[in-house]
Length: 245
Ligand code: WAQ
Ligand code: MG
Image 1 (cartoon, helix red, strand yellow):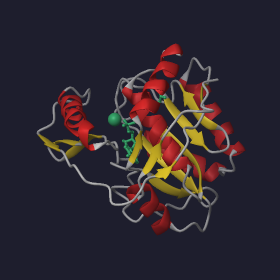
Image 2 (cartoon, helix red, strand yellow; image 1 turned 45 degrees about the vertical axis):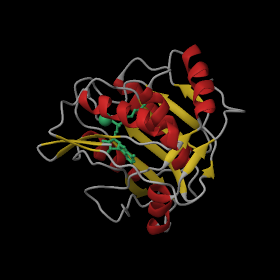
Image 3 (tube, rainbow, N blue to C red; image 1 turned 45 degrees about the horizontal axis):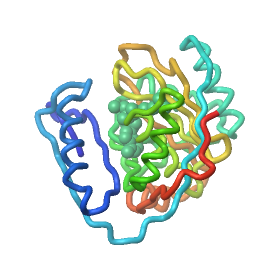
Image 4 (cartoon, rainbow, N blue to C red; image 1 turned 120 degrees about the vertical axis):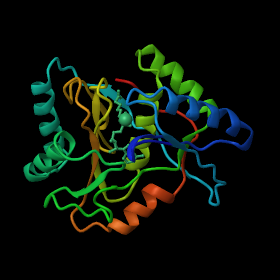
């Protein structure tokens, strides 16, 4: 689903569904586009496609939430977590600049973790992670578990699913994300190594900036990574082993 206003992109969302679930899923995406905090779109595009390949099985990353009461502390934490994951100071600076000052992109930047070079084929659009889904039964268990932590909402569930697919991609070291919604100030750093770390106050309230950076190993193959993120269907089948710390 895509919502657009005066050719500015407002939001996008997607999922994998069984055929029988499709009408309900489409209706709920439509409803979300019409009630989005970034405004009512002039145009909504809905696409329904049949999967050609059997989805790859992926696992959800474990979730934890950083305790931070301020934007300054959160920025410090972002730096130290990314350094721990092997991202250079230069790449951290470039990523924070892109998220806080750069134009809002539809997709994510692919950035080499050491050189800070951006390698995505289309620099203004970025790379869109897609074709990820979760079985209905797994989603019900996930909702229950997130509910106990006060986190059972679409924003968290979709971000966690996206981050879990991204982290499953060979060559990706970490992801940094800040929402472009002016009221949503919690972002995250996700990685196979440390899981999904929620970061309150990653941005200041009211800002319409935001974005995603996928840090890759220097020399990684941008084409292969883009193809995996955009095209390969990935499915969470169960939540065994999933934890909220
Ligand atoms: N693939 C790659 N990048 C994307 C995608 C995608 N499918 N969708 C959005 N982006 C980029 C794009 O640049 C957006 O501007 C930016 O990410 C933010 O997207 O646990 O709501 O949908 O509480 O605004 C984090 C949840 C929510 C944290 C993130 O992102 C939590 C969010 P938004
Ligand atoms: Mg948004």
